[in-house]
Structure formats: structure tokens, C-alpha cells
Length: 193
Ligand code: TYD
Image (cartoon, rainbow, N blue to C red; front, side, top):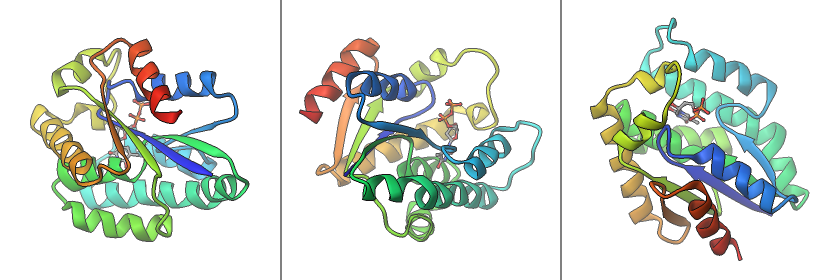
């Protein structure tokens, strides 16, 4: 029973890596955040909607509520059944986006999420590191509400992820995500062996 989180800014290639891991290791279950459970998917639609005014504290609580439901309904039972779960974003997304990006404070958001998850943490975190300019250039089509946040916001998010990676070297694996997807996947698989 292992929980593997995939983290990084928008356009880093998290979803591509998660799909690649699932293809290489058919026994793993892939879930995404926000989402992965019916309630959480509805919250996903709310937080992404550019037409909605969402206060930063409300935003943090919405992500935490979606996460609480995902943990209770899916993650905890899957891990208890001995499955390996690859999770496309987890608590560190909130630490970076709400704690640092929205400037609510990483410590406050960590406390909120400890409550939401009942203390369930990732065993391993793949951090797909790209400069904000590279992430933004990869986003195609319309931007959702969070993807419209400015350059200063994403600079804070990247700095927060970098700090988390430095503080938690036991669980963080930093991958250079400016590389082609195959190279990123190969590095991730090497770490899983
Ligand atoms: P993402 O999975 O990147 O969406 P998509 O697959 O549509 O690109 O997540 C949606 C957005 O939500 C993304 O901009 C990051 C943001 N987010 C937070 O701000 N906090 C969180 O806790 C999570 C899980 C996501």
C-alpha cells in the first residue's frame, strides 16, 4: 500500500506522467485532484469556473473538502486493500497554490489539510519541475480560473514546491519536466524499482 503523488504547476505534465505510470504498471490505480469522487468532481467544476468569484479562503476550503471526500471514499479503502495509488495532485498542491500562491500561509493550509485527510500523507512525491514560462506555454485552449492567475502567483507556487522538495527529501523526487514525456516517465519508473 503506497500513495504516490504527482505534483507541479499547470503544464508540467502531471497527467501525462500519471497515465504513463498506469500503462507501465497496470496494477496501480490512478486518481486525480480535484476530483476522483462524485462530490470532488463537482467541486472541481466550481473551483475551475472563471465566472465565479471565489475568495482565497473559500478556495482553500473547497479543495480541502474535495480532498476529504476523496480520502474517505477512495484513497483510504484502496490503500487498506493493499493497492498502489498514483494521485495527480494532493496536499502539496494546496500548500503551493493556496498557501503560497494565494498567500494564505503554508502552515495554515497544512493544518487545514491534516484535518481534511485525517493525516494521510504521500509515501512518495514526484515533483515535475518546470519554470512557469514553460508550463504556461504548454497550456492550450482556454485557461480555467486558476490558470489565469498571473506570473507572480506561479513564481510563488514554484518557490513553494522547491521549498517542500528541500524540506522533505525523504519523500520528494524532483524530475526535470522540461524533458520529453518519455524521459520523465523513464526516470520516474527507475525510482519505483
Ligand atoms: P489540474 O489537475 O492541474 O487541472 P487540469 O487537469 O484541468 O489542468 O488542477 C486544476 C487546478 O486546480 C490547477 O490550476 C491547480 C489547482 N489546485 C489548487 O489550486 N489547489 C489544490 O489543492 C489542487 C488539488 C489543485
